[in-house]
Amino acid sequence: MPPDRPLQPLRLSPAQRAAAAFGPVLVVLVFGALAYRGAEREDEGRAAVDARHQVIEALQAAVMHAVDSETAQRGFLLTGRDDYLRAYGGGRAALDVELDSVRRLTAGDPSQQARLDSLEVALDNKFDELEETVALRRAGRATEALEVVAAGRGKAEMDRARRLADDMRRAEERELDGLEKAEASYSGRLIAILGIGTVVAAVLSLLMNGVLERYGRSQARFSAEVERANRLLEEQHAELEAQNEQLSAQSAELVVRTDAAEAANLAKARFLAAMSHDLRTPLNAIGGYVDLLEMGVRGPVNDAQASDLRRIRHSSRRLLAMINDILGFARIEAGHVEVRPEAVPLEAAVREMESSFLPQAAERGLEYAFVPGADGVRVHADPEKMQQVLLNLVTNAIKFTEPGGRVTLGYEAAGDAVLIHVRDTGRGIAPDKLPGIFEPFVQVDRERTDTAHQGVGLGLAISRELARAMGGELTAQSEPGAGSTFTLRLLRAHADSPLPRIESPR
Image (tube, rainbow, N blue to C red; front, side, top):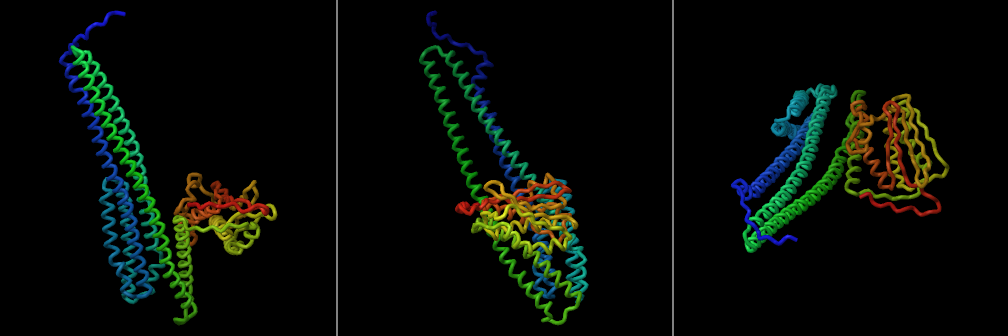
């Protein structure tokens, strides 16, 4: 081996000395600036998300003000009492406040501004109709006021306003989705930048340490430089620990936000349940007064009035059915569904419920057929909830099948399960819409559905949740123009075996 040679001093050029002195500082400044920009970007993203939420809330409030004003107008037209107009008087002012807020928040989005222009026109037209009917009623021309309402101009404008508000809300939700994805992508890049910066700083520090080691003239100077390098590494380690603590704090904050979101969903479900209960009382009162008028308690009823009373009864029953759907879904959301399973004879259960939909099928001019499977098949289910699911599937099939079509209900055993099929020859469902039909408040092809058959889009969502609560599943297959098949899968109940336990869906 060659003999050890003493450490020779390393002579550095002015440029090298400047790099050794200022290189680490420059790295720290560059990556510090990137981290600061990342924090600013996070604040900007949070502000953008808040703005999108404010737009959605303002749109919902605007539609509710319009609905409240319409309700007040109807009450005044029916009773002539001015106290009904209190909500109507303040509704327009509150509506303008919400629309001004939406216009301010979407000032940088030309497409949303254009939709907002159309929405304001629709709402202006609706309020023109309201003011016209109120004025007629004040003038003692109640019949003319009701004729204006019956003409449907106000309803058409209100429907258009709802569609435009829904379009704007969906656009804002798409923006929210994009912002969240961008935030996730930017967070990943920021973490990568911080990691690279740490590695670069560490590598640069090691390189500088090597230069300083060679630069020392003695072992003492060499030891001092090594000690200095160690202190620098310890400081970097401390910085990394601080960053880890910050990340841990952010993770805890995300957990808190998740808990808050779950609490908000529970509060929403409770609110829907409470509101649905509160709405039933006036609807039942409406039905009661219709009965009194039809019986002639308030005096003779002519043919036109009898027709109007039938329409009122039909509309109140439709609204009550919607409220019942909302209440049922709210109960499911809140985890208040109670399942009482038993071994249900399938054919007898189907025959029992046929009387509920056969008149509707006959009225639509449809052929209905029940194709039973093997005799004596029993399923493990809550009989009432199973019939509710099947009744919803059959009535949907009747609703979306043109006169002259066919609706078939049948079942088949498949191992330890029973598959109950509801088939129709209706219009079918487009492939891009099929995955979303079981989502709450989704109504496929609403514009082609009669108003009398429209609901709130909860029937299939409730049916799927009830199927799962009974330990089963609900699926669908469809081909546009060729019809649809909905399949309820339930566990088969055997006479010689106990009923399996069903776990709570929530």
